[in-house]
Image (cartoon, rainbow, N blue to C red; front, side, top):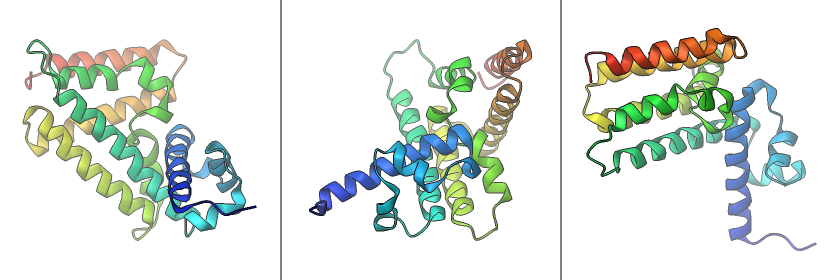
Length: 192
């Protein structure tokens, strides 16, 4: 069987990273194995070490990819030329939604990966990747409406916490009430 071309190998590697980014956001790092990650990309786990040095390497790259995806979505919001729209309001409405709660594999990495990164050793690739991605996300949120860093960090901490609590009690009406209360509080607050 012929070996894949460099272009094919790069495409396969990107597929594995993207698939793993979805898996770790949906299930957490501890619930994702190398065979699952490779299978999600449509590949066998036998070729894993041609693409990554370790599972930790893959997880760190998947974390970075998840943050990059969120930042790209923020940039798209910021590019909206509709003068009646508010990029911040659109971001908050999307973030604090039942759709985001119910589909973590396609959402922000913070609510899922923060716990995994917090439990990792200080020099762990996941922790470094998470911190780098979080810094980039804070910068992107600052550019969304020109807010200062402290306001962005408070707001981000609030919405991530709300999403974590909402997911923890999904299926109970408390979940929807948490999302609505935080969304209403932030949109009616002083930063409007």
